[in-house]
Structure formats: structure tokens, C-alpha cells
Length: 124
Image (cartoon, rainbow, N blue to C red; front, side):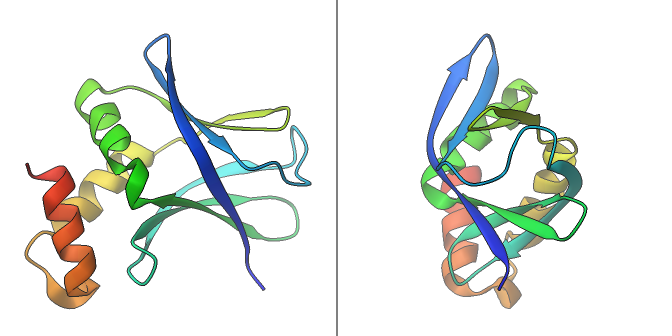
């Protein structure tokens, strides 16, 4: 089963968006940014890929956090995952998200719910 990290809350600190995740068993230095984002249309989430020596780990950026991501994109702010003692910049998130958002707009291939939610949040 694919390991998945869920965001608990988002906070702004010194112009950076901090995504605070539920505590897991990952320690500082065990995860790195894979610089790729997938779409989970069923869960209305963008999935940022993290990796360690053994596997990929999915960081779910679900729709309740999209307004904060929209602000981060507009402000060209860095986005960091904060979990346990780990603070990890989500490198490449901006480029990947911008590409996917543009691709999803008007594209029912991602599912009508995903298309509508992306348009509601990112294009209003």
C-alpha cells in the first residue's frame, strides 16, 4: 500500500507557506522532494511525490488547502512540509501545479468534480 501523508493545517510564516502534516514515523533526513505532482481526481487532491531510499510517499494537497496554494503561487512563496522534526521545501511545486491547473481547466478528462473545483479555486 502506498504511504500517504495528510495535511492537518496551513500557516504563513515570514512569507512562506508551511503545510503542517499529521505526525508519522518519518524522521528528519529520511524524505526528499521528488519535484513531481500527480492528480488524485477521486480525492480532489494534488499529490506531491516525496521519496526515501525504499519508496515513494504521497503528500496529499487536498482541496481545502488550495486557496493557500493559490496565494503561494501568486506570491511566488516557497511551500514547506512540516512534520515531526522534518521541514522540507516542496521544490518544483510551483511549476508542476501551474502546469496541472492550466491543463485541468476545461478538461473533463480529470473528472468533472476535479475540473469544477480547480476552476472554482484557481480561476476566480
